Image (tube, rainbow, N blue to C red):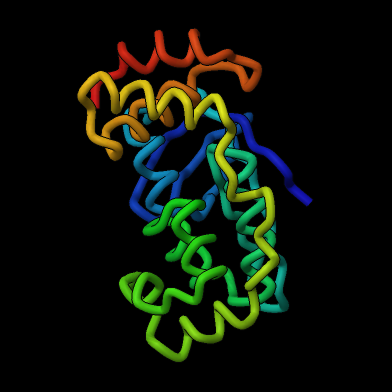
Length: 187
């Protein structure tokens, strides 16, 4: 199993990243969320947390910039398939996805391309109660978003700034460090 790949990002599309690792190019399927995080990193060294799916007719790598997103993918894809999982993770935040599944919000799920009413009902039926802590934000990131909202940013802008700041900081970063970097992030 290939758990992680570190290499130079040499090509990027909305659905695939190509990493050059010791002279070998790896094609890694990605979500739109991962694409947004990588768009400014073409030509640079990156790390992707990966899940390898081997079937009789294919061998595919799916990559994520966050370990929690990879963990969520690994919970979702056995139940609903990798293509539907990539679509869900690319269009809904972890928190909104969990809320939609836990509270049976079919209308939220059918807004995702490729998901109709029957698929949404099946997703809710298959996944209710299975997402647990994987979808929860840390309290420091929630506090940081709240602080930015109090400074006049919209909730969406604040979440985006915090998310970008977290990508450049170690997981152990405290609220003060997170806010300092987030305020310098251009969105």
